[in-house]
Amino acid sequence: MRAPRVILLTLLGFGAATGVYLWGRRVFAETRRASAVLNETLPVHSAWWRARAKEQGDLLYVALGDSSAQGIGATAPDHGYVGILARRIAARSGRSVRTVNLSVSGATAQDVVEYQLPRLAKLRPDVVTLAIGVNDIVRWNERGFTSAVSTILDALPEGAIVAELPYFYLPRSEHRVTFAIQAIRRLADARKLRVAPLHGVTKRAGVQGIFTLFSGDRFHPNDSGYELWASAFAPLVDERVDELATVN
Image (cartoon, rainbow, N blue to C red; front, side, top):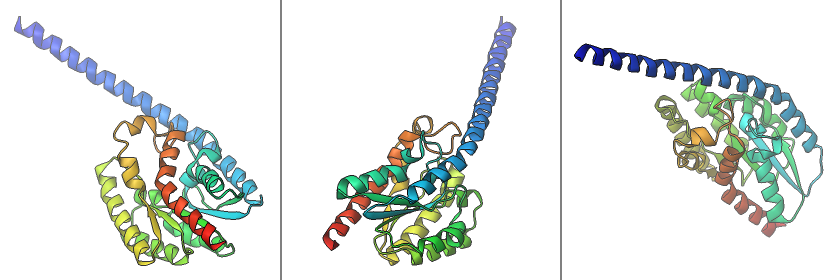
């Protein structure tokens, strides 16, 4: 009787392993398909934001960053956190808002220095947000990241809001993220810039956030994920808008 039981357990184990393998292959295939679809939205989002930059507004909101600032993964460009914050600024101030989104999908901190800061220098924004570093974690260079962030923060105007990196879930990535956040906070504090607690906000969503807050590519946030991102910025954006009201 023992041998058949061993065989049965072996077959069950093999079946379970096969099921996990097939599930993993399906998820991988779905992720690749979703990534391909999102790649096609990159120029669409970029063009949409360029068009918005031409609109007039009483207040000027400038966003710096990468694909998250572009709203990649959302159902529409303005369903990303930048669009959400732009509407929040308008609602709180009671004034129209022109949004200039200088972000570029795939950008690293050094890319912000080279391509986004020169364009920022030509503007006189009332509100500025920066969220950068996710792509740096993939191609990690501690000294390079710290140097680039220092240069960026030196160029930001008073009242700018700088975000932490989001929660990465994976321990190896989180080790790098911890260093990046410490660098951002240290450099921002020295310059009296506000820091949005994006890491803590996204981490509190828990493991279930992997299934509820990300788009099909398992990398970019979905609409719900971007609402969570916006909530990390919101109190600081409100503070900035209130400051503008006292000045104007």
